[in-house]
Image 1: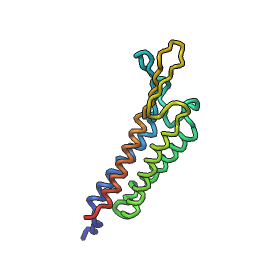
Image 2: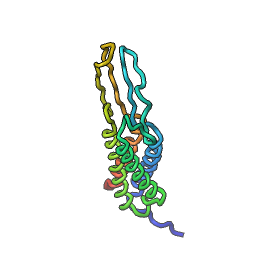
Image 3: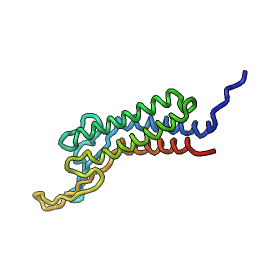
Image 4: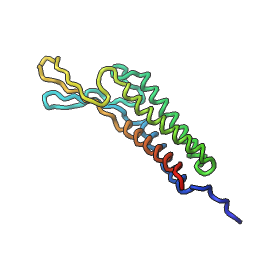
Length: 171
């Protein structure tokens, strides 16, 4: 029996599919990990100012909960899109739709990462701020940094973008 001919550019599309699978698992893991951490330093001693903020059950005193839920919605939309395209082997059967949805998933993941910058109520998301109004007179340094979940979502967006780029390159 003759094997059906593979579509043109199959090695590139196979690579793009592998990148989409990796992006899916990274984004799914990002849902479970903290996205923002706050530390404070006073007189050379540093420590956690508040528990790390994740996507589930955010502290309303630290973050705007509606922005956190927007991040969850963007991340979930990207996950659903990636899951459908990877599970259906769209890279093989519908390569144009696979490329389009890879680009859309990239934008959704990037938007999810960008939306985290609007979370904080008072403290910076990724910066440091000095407060001097305490009783000891020593300045307190508050440092906001992205958590592991944010970094995984950013890498997932990069993988998706790489997959889209690889899949659209000419032979």
